[in-house]
Picture (cartoon, rainbow, N blue to C red):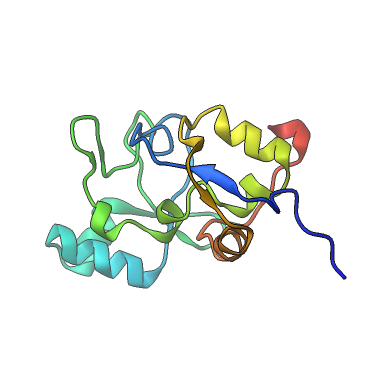
Length: 148
């Protein structure tokens, strides 16, 4: 019988729409072809124009949304929040239940330092968390504890 993960009793999260996950340090918001197409439709651009204006190719060959010079997501607005919320990428929809964040309680606490919604709100069950983390839309890289 396999051992249950450290979050076997579930985890609490309620988005406060603070934008901390959309701003701050440089990063990557990986997007699939389907997500790019959905976003392009939402903003009213053809695929080529959208890709040129709002995406970039990462070193690993995947596509990411672009960032502003201050490292905010290109679709983040201080006044409105996420301007493409209805079509936001999987990586955004699955926060904070990313594989890297639930890898250990230390990783979860590190994510909570920048996210006031972690530890708040409804309780998410083990099965939901595990399913989300397994297909979170991120690179799947989990940092070592000393990198937190």
